[in-house]
Image 1 (spheres, rainbow, N blue to C red):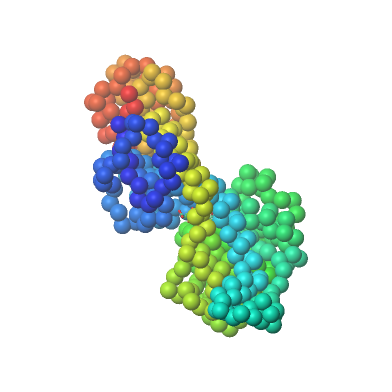
Image 2: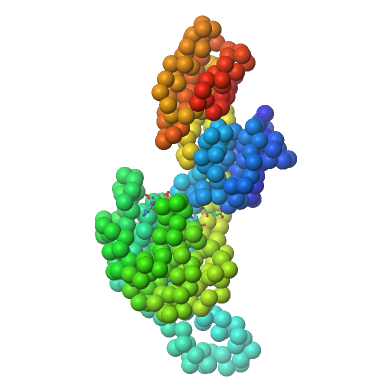
Length: 387
Ligand SMILES: NC(=O)c1ccc[n+]([C@@H]2O[C@H](COP(=O)([O-])OP(=O)(O)OC[C@H]3O[C@@H](n4cnc5c(N)ncnc54)[C@H](O)[C@@H]3O)[C@@H](O)[C@H]2O)c1
Ligand SMILES: O=C(O)CC[C@@H](O)C(=O)O
C-alpha cells in the first residue's frame, strides 16, 4: 500500500490512474509520494517516508532539488505536458500587446447604457487601433518544449522568427521549423526584434537575465513577453522602461507588486498551463512516472536522478540504491550480496551529475539485514527493496 498527498489541486484524470494500492496520506508526513504544482517546498522538511515528489508541470524552481537528492527523494516533472497551453496564451499575449483589445472591451463595458453605442463605437475605435504581427520580428529565448511551439506558431502567423538557445536538445532542433533563424548571441536577438519572449527555466544563471542592460539593447517600442518566471526579469528596470516608453508592453504571466497595475504591463494571473488539457496531461504523466518509480523502481523524467529503466518488476526481488556518483559503489554492493550467496539476475547503473542510481534484480529474497548493510555503505543515500 502506498500513501500519497496532493499539495495543489491535481486533475482527477491523473488521480484516477492510482489503483486501490494507493490511499490518500491525510498529512504530508505520512506520504510515500507527493504531487505538487506551484507550491513552494523550499522551507518544507521532508519525512523519511517520502520517496518521490511528482511535479505536475515543467518548472521545478519551487522544489529544493539537491536537498531532495541528498535525502534520497526522486523528483519528477512532466516535460512538454503543458507546452501547448502556454504556447496558445503566449500567442494571445502577442495579440493583446499589438491591438488594444483590452482597452476596446473596457470601452464597450463602460458604455453599455449608451443607446447609440454602435455609432459611437465607430468614432471611439481609433483610440484602440494597433498593428499586425505578420512581418514583425520575434525573438524566442529558450527553444525547449514551449519555445519551439511558440516559434513554429509565430512562423505560421507570418512573423520573422529568431531563436536563441545555446543548449538546445537534438529533439527540439528536429521539431523547429526550418524557417527560424539562429541567433548566435542573445544580444543579437535583443537588438533586432520587435517582440521578445523568454522560455527558459529559472536557475541561478538565468535569474535577472532581462535586466537594464538587456532592455537597453532592445528597440524602442519593443514588446517583452514572460511566461516562464518573474525572476528572469529585473522588474524594476522593466517598469522604468515601460514608463519611459522604451518598452511598449510587458506581458507577464506572473503578477507581482512591482508590475501589477503599471501602465503598459499586461499581467495575467499565472494562467499559462491552466487549461483542462494541460492539467490532465500533467496529472496523467506525473502519476504514471510516480507509479513506475514506486512499483518498479524505474526513473523517467527525473530532474535530480538519472533516468533508469529495468522494465516491469517480475518475480525477482528488486533492490534500488540511490547514491552519490563516486567510484566503487557497485563493487561494494555486489560484495555484500555475494556474502549471502545471492545471485544477481540483472543490474543497471546510471549517473547524472553528482548522483547515481543502481537497480539490481535478485533470484532470491532479500533479508532486512542485507538491506540495512547496503544502506550503511558510505555515499548511499537510500535503499529500497521491492519484494
Ligand atoms: N506560465 C506557465 O504556466 C508555465 C507553464 C510551463 C512552463 N513554464 C515555465 O517555462 C519554462 C520553460 O518550459 P519548457 O517546458 O519549455 O522547458 P524546457 O526544459 O523544455 O525548455 C527550456 C529550454 O531553455 C533552454 N535554456 C536554458 N538556459 C538557457 C539560456 N541561458 N539561454 C537560452 N536558453 C536556455 C534549454 O536549453 C531548454 O531548451 C519552465 O522552466 C517554467 O518555468 C511556465
Ligand atoms: O501548475 C500550474 O498551474 C503552473 C505550472 C507552470 O508554471 C509550470 O512550470 O509547468
